[in-house]
Image: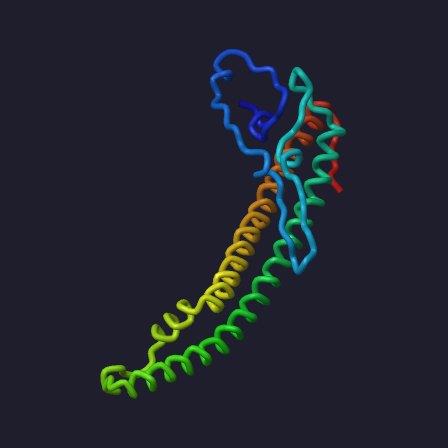
Length: 200
């Protein structure tokens, strides 16, 4: 199998054993990258970028290849910038969460003390209660419906940012590899045609 087949084409007429290749169906929305960075929407479709469209007989135009190469560089840079912005946003959210958790822990500690004072009045020996532990505070926080909503929101936000970070970082690597494959095809064609191909 040649390099031009490895990097993925659409429209190639295949014959013989190659028709037995598995048919993988990927949901279209997987190719749509959408997220928000501080209210700024980021949207991009990568299906056209990660494959090479060909004619009915698998022909590839050098002009199309060169255009795809330049667009690959542009999109690799775009996703790299997006990844850095996501990393900045995550650090910002983590700082906000640490500040919120510190303030909330103080409230939870005060609530626990108030509850223990009330229990002491009812005759529960103070020695049975022990000191207030980190687990006590966490349980108090998670048992408060209002605090639990905010806690889950922070966790969901950071999880989503982590997912988008991994996607954008992976896309940069895939696009650069794709561009390298296209560049190799152009060099080989130039060599066969007895001319040089210079990539500025």
